[in-house]
Image (cartoon, rainbow, N blue to C red; front, side):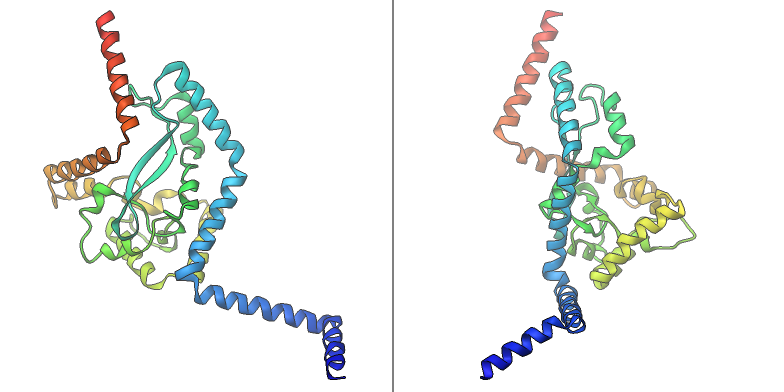
Length: 282
């Protein structure tokens, strides 16, 4: 009798539209609380993965088109070494990570090809970074990526910025400044983000991108951080020397050489041999 009464009460509860709406709203509230509380250790990674997966799927036709055209160019001219180009930046905790883009520069004269110019002007050049987002090497929202050679000159005070992953969007979008943004401004913004970031902060940064687009504001909000490398700025200020930057770049080059696979080394040797043969024939 008790079980029958309980079943009748349950059915009447779900047949009541107001009770059902209350039940749904309660579920949504509890889910939102869970996301907010566990955002840093889990849900930020989960949302980054889902965003990367979604973007990979919807941009797949563009990926395939660019890859095919680039491969045809490689076969016809042999002036691209690869469809993709990687640049190494300092990731979370300063760990080196490779961020990928489509190759736009001719391997001989180091100038953009016609197709490369198109990729650069349309922004398609950086589309492969979506794959890095899918692999969780970067986040949708995080600090601005710094080159490995620049990371070596970041002070201990500002090094805390590397406690989070680099992002496609960074906290500078929230800054309202009357002067050109400097690297010091960026580092201060990064440190504040490291201490304050959470679900609402990331949502605020994400929507600020669209607000600035609507206002018609362009990339000048990033100041010198968008125009020059950090090491170059320090050299111009006289805080480090050209020898310091050369030494830092040498360390990066050594690291990249160690990452090369035997197959890549064989390809480089073969290309060098072909160049030598061509010179002999001439």
